[in-house]
Image (cartoon, rainbow over all chains, first blue to last red):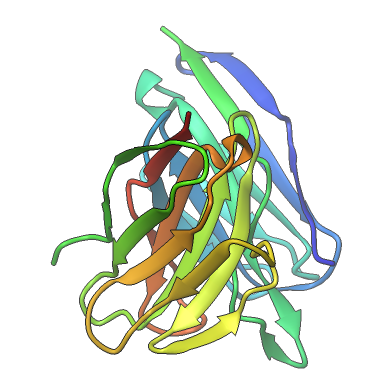
Length: 115
Length: 113
């Protein structure tokens, strides 16, 4: 079955520092999604990547998907306390050239930003 | 355009009772997904529905759990004869098409006492 591994599990950074979170799949992905979750709340959609080598940015967050579509990274530049939360990668497994439809998730990376 | 609405936000049930969790997807979204999140654990996929049809229920326990998404009205996740182990946060998400980004509700926190 498809699995997503996220690293690191948790991360504490000083405000203003850059950081990277990784997401690795055991199989080729149809699509890769990044979400952020604050404690006790629902998930907020950040970005979606579908093409190998694709890179997207929004404000200070950049996400990349490798050419083989099995690994993605999320990079935050000049982190702020507002970036704190749990970051989850989600993916739709590839199935016979298309997606299976359902979304599976990694266990998440807990980010704390020290002022 | 209102987001995904889940209710209730908090639900307390005694062991053996039934729990009904509701999810109204975003307007124009016909695909609904249910997930369970336990403390310190990730989101576990339960079931994927598309208007009146169950597409994938591979993550759903075979007993006591059922889901539906009728032609009219919200999607319902039903848990019969709840046990303490069912205590968790249950999240619903919706998307307009099969391969688009899914948007999540705020979740229902079920506590079984």
